[in-house]
Length: 511
Ligand code: GAP
Image 1 (cartoon, rainbow, N blue to C red):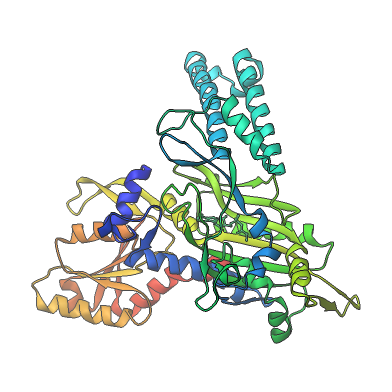
Image 2: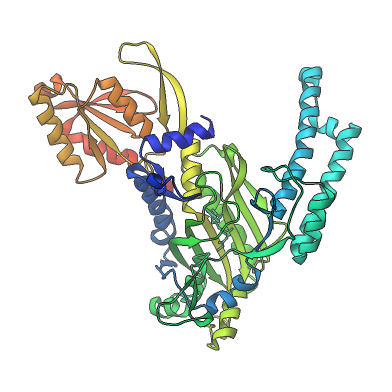
């Protein structure tokens, strides 16, 4: 399914709505609907349990969004959390200069891809892309150009050299996609933190920031948590919560928004052991993704070349979204940067006494950080598909189905009386529903023909449909239709709950 239809499906079936839609929406802000909130909660639950419940040495917290403003000075966000901003004077549109330059590179690469496709069509099965790239003069020339531009961009970004970025925009004759003009302002640093004002203090002193990452709530609570839980290093602190970034360009649905949720875990370790733990968490996190049955070809690692101000190693787990491979999760070796900075700015000692070494030190940190909304988008884009399947009469029909892992599915089971106007059936179905609703999210649906009701459940990813028919009245059995295989099993009513519970149990993801 293409991306536009995926977004339309999310709205039509109550997963995601544009925010304040009656006022024409607010750019890049979204609300989660009845099925969206269930799916999102299930994602969070899986993450939380895999971190906190499954590790005796990881505990959770829920820190406030507002933090003392010095937090952000210490973390480097006041000085270094910037994107290079440029305005087009004609369209009045804002862009990130680095993204404009990347767009220029993509256009060169697109020319290469076009030549490659032409050659592939000409040579057929005998075509060897790697050989063609290495020997074709035009491709070699363009690749050199790409490497030069990317190298220049990386250096300018690292040095924070705004003049160089402006020079590149001018030199490569980059035009505004909206106005088509090259009438650009200077490139300047734009801080991504949203700020607001404390009620009882005027001026700069009362300036507060909405946290741009949840991690800092963990760092400033390091000693509180360690002392109150008597954890010994290595140990971790996990948190799920909202983060805010005033992204210059927010786009691609819920992929990049200005308000989003993060699931972060900081793992505190002995200095010198960071590479060992970095590799451990890299593999552990990939395993977490794969356990959901996500197509492994859609997941890959991407090592960072340009490291954030706090990191000495960093890797992304990328997912192949409908618009290409993009970052889904980051694993960062953050050294002792944050704790040392907080120690310095607060004037409070933030150290751990290691009884085995008989010495105190500022712990090092490996963090895993994943956006909940991005994980949501990854899961629905991997799950949704259109399939031709036999309908109730055995004729081919097309269904839209969300093949979400049953653990993540918003509704676990739908209870459907075969006919609406037969009281014996609706009553028996209601009895089943009332029993099951104590254990998991179920739906009762009696409207429309049974085939249409199955399709509605397929469209929201319900793994099990339980049909109550005339045989139920005779022998207390029901049919359970399985979403993916379409298999229908007859099961005694007393076994229905267990049957579903086995299918949706989170334990299966942890083994
Ligand atoms: N504490 C480290 C940190 O915040 P990051 O790579 O900037 O690192 C971590 O963000 C994750 O948060 C990303 O991998 C992504 O999933 C999510 N994320 C970041 N910015 C986002 C945005 N504007 N919208 C949605 N998700 C975002």
